[in-house]
Image 1 (cartoon, rainbow, N blue to C red):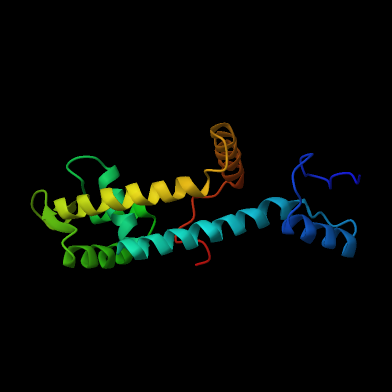
Image 2 (tube, helix red, strand yellow):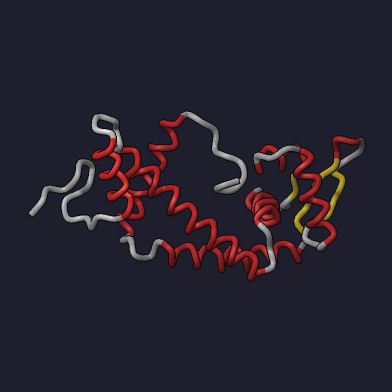
Length: 183
């Protein structure tokens, strides 16, 4: 029986990423190919997760930007109100992008523009009851679907993977990305 390729845990079934790494190892001896086993698989998983999220959100009648806006307001806690600047920062988008998101959501009755005092900087965006109800339904369905996507992993393996990904991102020393995978 042949030895496992470098970096592959004993007993793990080889996949396309292993084949790609082996081909580059053969074609470019001496060039490090170990990143293929991590980065290629992360890209593939991100594609599966992103496609599934977009499909489910489309079926639920919500786009990713609206979900981000509504989720940000809901996670802020009661009274589910934030200034446009706070929303832009929390959603990691420009103020112009937040203005567009708020406009679409307000037209749909999911948020309302409110004031918290007087003056230009006293404007706020508040989640409406309709927006809260939609978000609760969407998040419950979305998280159940995403749980099914990783359901083949034991709880211990999920925790291990979450820890490894946290370490990976911390080591990249970069702010979390904005936008969606592939944008």
